[in-house]
Amino acid sequence: MAVDMGYAGQIRIGTSASATTFVHKINEWSLEMTADALEETAFGDTFDRAYLPGLRSWSVTLSGYSEDSDSVQRYLIKNFTATAGPYVSTAVYVAMITGVGAGTAGTEVSGYDGKGIIVGVTRGATPDGLQTFSANIQGTGLLTTYAS
Image (tube, rainbow, N blue to C red; front, side):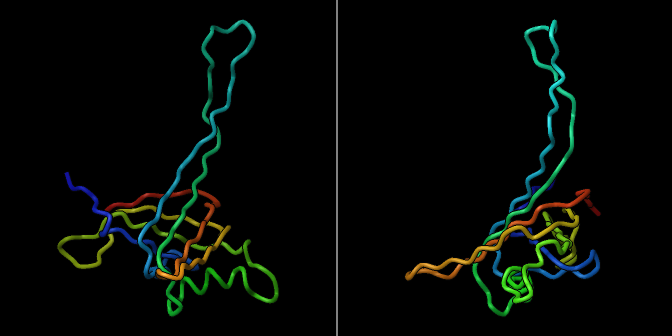
């Protein structure tokens, strides 16, 4: 059984599944998958609550160092700084790569992907450190997994 090492992971963002680009200088990403639990407990039931599965959702948070030359970071920031107004309703395609092939350099072998909406972008700085960048993406539909 192979263990997925953190340094082998990456995150890619684009306008479609075939047009994603690696986000540079990202050193952390997380994928949260949740589902609602709908309570169906009624009068006369036992002392234990009962639940049914509800709707699912997912979201991605990524963070790292600011890189002004990175086209994806610029694209994410543009969604909130355009003079015509924010484009937060624009769906983006997100791929979270959890493993790459050992035999063929850069070959993606496992991960998650789906469409989402950019719901937050943060830039930060301290006087004694590098500038930081982070973004939050809310999934808008099915999250799929893949493995080769």
